[in-house]
Image (cartoon, rainbow, N blue to C red; front, side, top):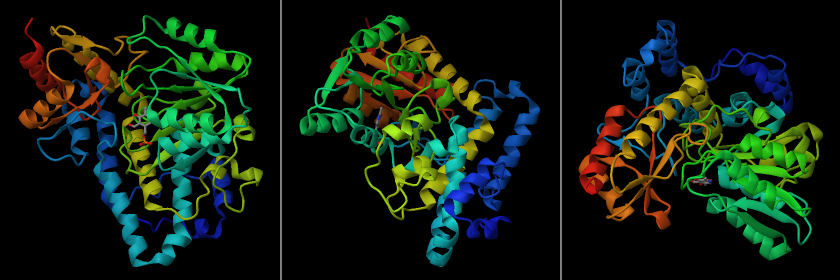
Length: 438
Ligand SMILES: Cc1ncc(COP(=O)(O)O)c(C=O)c1O
């Protein structure tokens, strides 16, 4: 509940002091563990004591995790794009804080800043960043726009982007190109790529003296490729080029570490794989890159050096329960364990790819290599339109997949931790029924 023992202390602190105090070792974890949610975390801890062998495919551990999501019985949710599934603990927190706001608006402005700050610090820890490098936004699109409009560039300066970028990454740069004369240069990546080196060579060969920034999706929405982001950042750094990554799908899917990746800007959405409410995103700006990136919407304190990445989210009062619930989603995944989540997701995807590759007329467009792939598996189909197949699976099995990459008539299947092998078998059964004939 909100009556944390720290609440009075927090109220008396300014937002920034609180952030500093947290960095200095202030205990995290009190705010979100209310009475409704505590028993879930206690059960998770009990599972951990039993050892990892209890994680066996579709075993009791993953049944327990699946039961923490609020999905309708019978619904198989194999799309985490647009909006993914939310665990009950997150919904509890969201509802609780909106209720507090309705019942006592004074609490909303006297205490919520501190809770939002706790969520932000949790977010930084979760992605391997410093608290001053992270701020909470509405989504990936917002973060990508801040980068596209916030960097100083002259007419003729270049941004390199892959041919597989999402419109939310492309169009802010298109606008800037139209308005200010910068140049967009596309770097072609094959689907699937023949190797990691092929991707790196394509970027290396495209950099010129006018290249200022590279835009690259960490997880490509229409092919499922996980880009070799760390290597791209390393070659860009050698040429003094900044890297902005669209990580829309990666938070909650991959075991992220911003400092290890060496990326300058990273934007993502909390409501795809992380289980946070819609309208939440985490935006990372490497400390040393903050001098290069102007904010677009500002409040009084944007020039205060202590603001750090907070200067990119000064937009007046927002719906505070949203970032607070994002903090709960992070707490939930932290309790399961980031490496365990990535492992489970990739193991499910590997099974799906292996089995799908045996079906005639189905082409696996996502790399088999677990370094170059994650929880998005894209399958090219022949013989029935991708939207018709998606409708067929919905109507026949109540199973949601996305259609994507229309040039390749593809579908996209997401294998999050709450998906079972049994559910993947149902998808394979549908594919075999429709495409399995030579
Ligand atoms: C790769 C990628 N980038 C950006 C976005 C936009 O996400 P949002 O609407 O959360 O900003 C999406 C949406 O699914 C996406 O797949």
